Length: 586
Image (tube, rainbow, N blue to C red; front, top):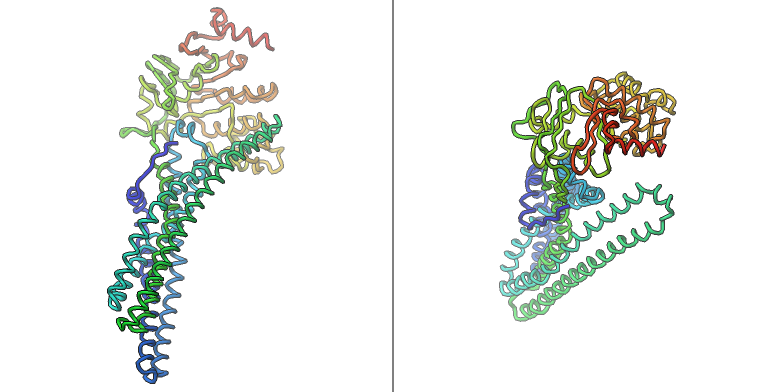
């Protein structure tokens, strides 16, 4: 996965449209933040008034005056409570909505990425980016504008009030602020770098766990639990070291803040006391001054401490952008049209192809013509490009040079949805989703009726064994269909293609992993599926392709032999050798 990094300004610019979508809630949230701030700043003024009046003439402070001030403050606290409730409730809901929108955009973008992206990206990393990383964005989206807005109000109002009380002391206090920021910012930037490493290591840890758990049978079969534990311990230890470093920076960060807190309080205590002795500040003013300085220090501390949450949010946004900015390599051309009623006539014209990531050359000058309704089998040694050739037709990859046409039109001329909707693929490694039998078959054509699903299962030879399951078509089959045998899973995947009813079929070693009995049953289903359709069959077991209209022998040099089963045997070439070897093994 590309590790592109962004500046803070770039991150804000890309994040702002998500925030702007909920500008109404944001404005109301900031209004409530202003109310809570005003309520907080009124108390020092009340205390200043009471203290100064009490020193001048204690008798002048009537019960009515104190009661009125108490009632005013009580009213302000009621307002503060309602405003705080809105901020805590709707503010967080707004953040959650933004998180949801971002996760949706990331997931939608992932659906558009090519096979190359997934070949080079660990699923655990992707999962971490669209789940854990975006959790921090919820808090960031709510608190970032709120905290900075409150800090701005408090700083400005505090400066104005403190300046009116004693300008000299205020200037001394505020000169400490830029020094504090200058000292804390380098630590802040180091924290961001550590958080980035931490998020990446979480992804690696997730990938390690997923890999080990999905391959648990292999682990147990080779009794390699100790090896897996050692691998996990290595990744887990690396995560521990990163977290330990992050806490070291956090400790230094918070200690620095406390040091400056103490310095500012010391200045007020000493300088303020001297000013009061010299009559330059009234006792009540000093009380109010200390309270405002306390408010100011608390505000500065919250902003600087918020830097931790801020950097977590920035890291989450950055890792989100690394997904949505990943290049979409396979896309609809501007003039792409919907493929309607395809006949299935496929032509490869001087096709060259190399994998985009490692530039491994697979084909050079490949020419091939497959007639509509023809059944073509492809055989040859591993690494010759059989599966790659079939993957080029539905545009899982795009050719490097030349072109592939369908019914006389370049496949790039059609929309991806309509092109792939016209092609059914049955693979050796069947993927069934966690759910019921019915849900997995209807995936071939969402919206199909139950009767149509059952008819597709009958044609695939799956209906009988499905009805013997505990809940029939509503039986839960487990993750990746773990509760079914290989042959059962394969027939369900064939039923899925029957329901889709495409004019072009690609069978990628669909029976090679099955036992003889299952292979025979699935082969019958595949024969039924292939009737009247253009069919490409990749096979290692030559017995399954003897009746193909044409057989191609594909090697690293391209298509080296071509003909019917008997023609190729008569040539006594590569196909003949493969056939003789297969017979000898049997």
